[in-house]
Image (tube, rainbow over the protein chains, first blue to last red):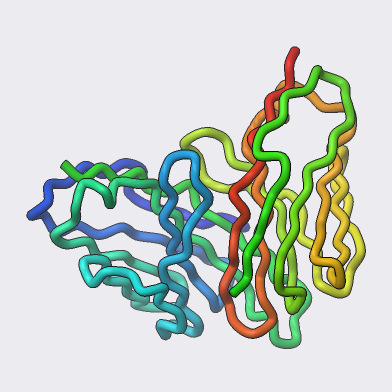
Length: 116
Length: 112
């Protein structure tokens, strides 16, 4: 199973709402990622978790709050977002490169977020 | 800071032609390089992964090469088909951390 599953596929939320995006993988990968992608732009790194701990935060505003409850799950909690936060949010996972060969990154199909 | 550049930004070719997409990166301290395909509004599909110690990888009509010292990779697509139309993204993973950095992509259109 080389699948990364993201839910929901689409989300519309108001600027005062609180919502969460969910990502799940069962490949035993230790690194999990959140990316933001605007139309006709490349994916932009937001957060990286390694062994369930936040290892990289690319200076993302605090209205985005990541969480890694266990090695298979990654959440992105959203609060007080702005219309410019509307984008495709992609989750990815990858294997530990230390001592292993397979380091391919796998991406989910994304959550299309619209903030109104 | 790693920067990844893809040339050309867009490409239209008739069906059946062979074509080459280019990717360059500024920091040669990479762990691997991965080529992805993205259809409009969809997620990323991994095409080929090249480890830093490798020179090329092949999958079907696709061949990717890596010249780590010069900071370059190419994706060769043989006998192009209309179904190959998509955006192709090059992504580099550094050897110091887990960051995966993307180029801006090449939008490919294969004309029937």
